Length: 509
Figure 1 (tube, rainbow, N blue to C red):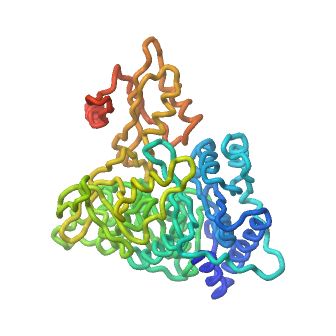
Figure 2: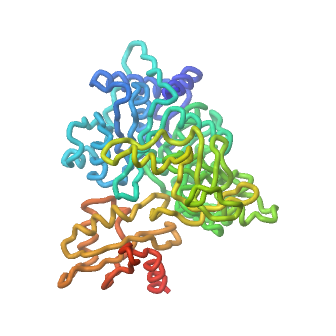
Figure 3: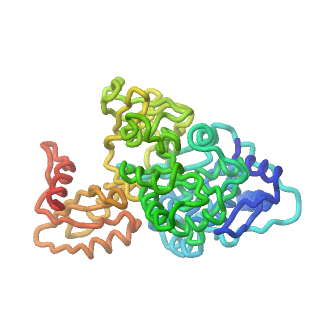
């Protein structure tokens, strides 16, 4: 099923209904939203974009983002949304790896990408200059099949290079229906607020709101500001949003000052660990508005869910343990815990979280990262091995305990140490480096680096900061550098990151 067909149906049912808003200002009805997407598809086709071709978007949140997405799908192409927080060099690598013919950008991003190797041959189209609606009948959306890839999501890997997750029309349709079954109901009176990046989880929730003819709201700031979110919710009413734990924390602080969260219907939180005390306080301040989900790019937004009622319940004897979990399997998947040898772990035993079902990705994009080999490692015997460690209780609630990968989750965003380490190692004075996460009360974790300098070299944090800022996104830059004479290693020469975490605890004790 082509998502553009959902848009056309909503436009046919109520063409004058408000669809896209910037703040509380309507910038497109459903009729004009669908028409602009169809005309954009015609423009893409006229420029040689064929079904199955890749079209990227490298831009901050804006109403035009959704027009571009649905124009891409209307034409039968594959959308490649790129995190706007990435460095232009990183975005250019993704564009080249995906083989994108066109990339929708803001004017600022266009200037930055134009000078980066990797984006050669990709036409940069400004989101500010999308074609206007012209006279004439609109073409029908491309007849997309369930197995067709429609979203290519790049998620960083432990190799330091991002991998393209191939999500099919069936993956995203089932994710959308799982929202209704496991997360929340949606009506035409509702609004979805995009305060987190539309290239990621927040953007994936557009589908159900298009399907139901609801409003799509981009804050004027283009990002997350707690006071702005609460002001908009109060004016618009029935507002839902996806939020990382650090965003929830700020919302709670702002709501406490205001005396509540009027107009905010649902906050779906995920993307990182949420402290138990924080979620208890969130319910006390904002009421029963919170739903937790757990997913990853390879099984988008749809591994487990902890319902609004379960998050708010304080009557069950084990409510604290339940609230510390990430909920139970969503309707479209089978969930398990496996030992390293592939045997099932009994109730309560920690093992690797695995998931099975039609919601699991089609595989990794071939590109430059050997997608077939990566897919074979991730999907074994029909199970997606998530890399997350957890345990199931007798009632099926999943509690995450650790991650087998070294991913750092800061503010709901994944940061992979290897890519930061590779940048730091390009400094001529750096001999060895190891990057780990440090607990942070606001962000969940922040990035720190242990650095071994070459003999006779004097390296400063300022130099390393400048190196990172020139090569990777600002949010990946270490917040602290610890200069050490050597790194702890085992007999095989592998750095013992556990020992570094212990050393970090001593440093901060």
